[in-house]
Length: 490
Image (cartoon, rainbow, N blue to C red; front, side, top):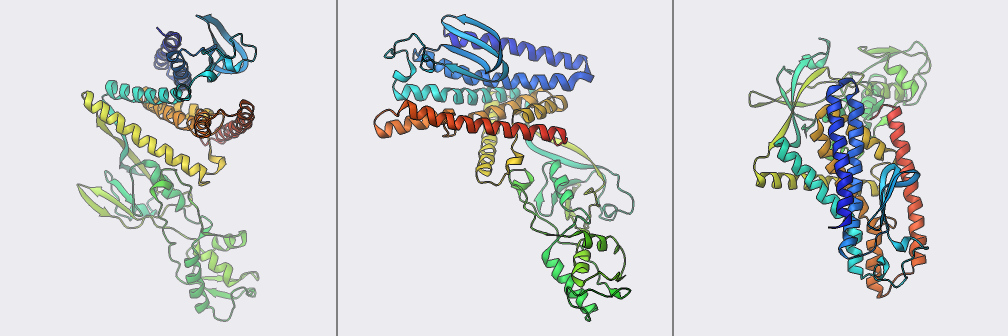
């Protein structure tokens, strides 16, 4: 039996035991449940790291490559536990978010002869490739097992879509939602042409359609200026209008509605707001215009500023609901100045039943495939610069969000999130960047193309540079995570 299986199995059993204990404690002490849920998420992430490194370890043993160290955690801070097991030094470091497998090649003082076949660097490229890619493979297998386990025990899988029904209208009677024709029990299916399958879509639309949000459409501005100029032909665009002069105002029309793509709604693409912004003078004029058809100049007004002011108004949401099996287009709804409509939702997640082994396998495979496509697209958005660095998050944010998911939606939802993280870990690790598994594979491919080994010194220097860049990236995402926690954005 392989040493990697024994060691990993023992640690896995201990982690699983801790998970069960924490889950029971969460039920026994509801007030402390969020804390226990967060620790559960930490342990689940730790399992992913253990699985990844165990994959490297197992592959090395298959090819009889000598492994000197198998470490759980990164060598930062003290070593919590250390023991030699059948020639392999097993360590648990205090900094649990990480792990590594060390070969004699990594230790210049290793007693193993330089030409020993047990050394990793003396093995054929194919065997090296298998060892390098084994961690990624292990994470993919782990992701599938987590999803299949959820589908088997839970008996269902989330579709990622929701039915959103109106539970109650809580806005003041003067708000537009009361005149829109919306009724309790209606199911919201579309806003401004976008299919509404997630509650957050409604909130995103409502926030972008806030009344008096300080931003205006350029077409509306020019239209309002032309109408204003017709009513007040004596003044040019930027001419100061004398004090106490009465300025006639045109009928104020709602602004143009905004339509969001599915990628923007799902957060894969950042919305670029190209509207014009009002300055403080224009905002001050806007706040004096509500319901008026004239305004008296204070000696600083210009037609241009007034045109900006009258262009910043209400923005319609065109909502389609389903009622008794029929689609109904409502009258426009105008969110208030806080970006709220004034409704309470009754949200029901659409689930896919999983009964029988074939259903479990097909549903789990489709679930993972869909998530892989989304993860790859998100990665493309990052490298394409469509997601700013300020929105990149790491292990702290993942732990916080994962803890909330377990606490609010149950352990199986947390297990599915862990499966997605395992997939993400596999994808990220296999990127062709030095210091990552994919970088090592890239060097192997270059070696095969060149027909000879690359200089170990050159590889080490390149790896060191990219490792430092990786550390800087970790610092950045940790800063983003901490800032988001402090600002309560997570």
